[in-house]
Image (cartoon, rainbow, N blue to C red; front, side):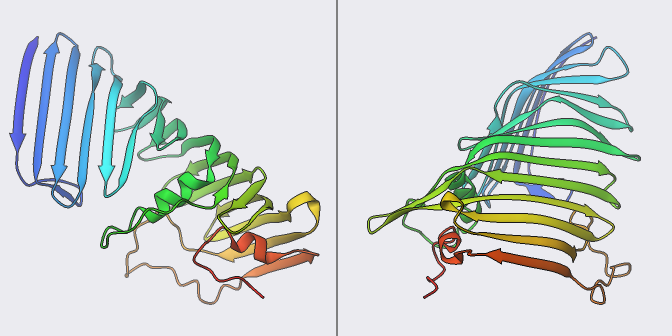
Amino acid sequence: IEMDLMTTGDRISFGSTIFDSVQIDIDMKNSLADFHFEALQDSGIYASVKGKADLMSGIIVATVDSAEVTYNNISISNANDWIVNYSPNQKVNFEQFAVKSLETVLNVNGDFVFNGMSDLKIVGKDIEISDIHTLINSQDTGRVMIAKEYPVKGHISDLIINFKGDLENPELNLKLNSELLKYRDLKEEFNIGDFRAEINYKDNMAATDIIFTNAEGKGNLKIIGDIPYRNPLSEIDTLVEIDLSDEPANLRLASENFVLDYFLKLIPSLPDIG
């Protein structure tokens, strides 16, 4: 079987996203296919995916050697060749899937099951704290902003996210550890400290275990307890929306010579505490 397909279209919908221009190229010989998907939206979304697909077995194996998605000022690309195994109507297996934005690389591994229990892990190492600040603030495209260097320097040494279960009843685990963070601008320079956080989410409840430590171990703040939180992976349906207003938060804060003003420097727009 041989097939060479090139098609273009305007105003094509993928779920709730509508693209103004789409082009799909497929060159298929027997069970092997080269493909290139490209889409553009006037509001600022661009996507391009290029690779090969092996259709020989009951599992479709896709190898993507080039992927790029741009949304507003955020650009995401592949950091390696993506290898994705698709079992029709069953699951998607991410065998090799490293996503890059700025200098940050996140590795995705595991199975996303359509009607069953998924098991996915996202891992990041040595993430620049300035990359996180840039990605968060790149959402605002409504006004022209003068680029200003983020004054906090340092890395997130480990970022690990585990997702198990399904979208309606997920079990999420987040681990986040930083190295020593430093503040430096034209007026002053000093060490801030580091932090360690673990959050476990299940049954609309987030169990937190967070500790902020001032530089040189001079003080710390511990936040431990449970916070009611609506499922972040499920779309809100007003007919079945869960009311969590009666669920109390149970948080314990323990401070030992902790200087909060240092950590407020992570958000430059906040005023200093005198």
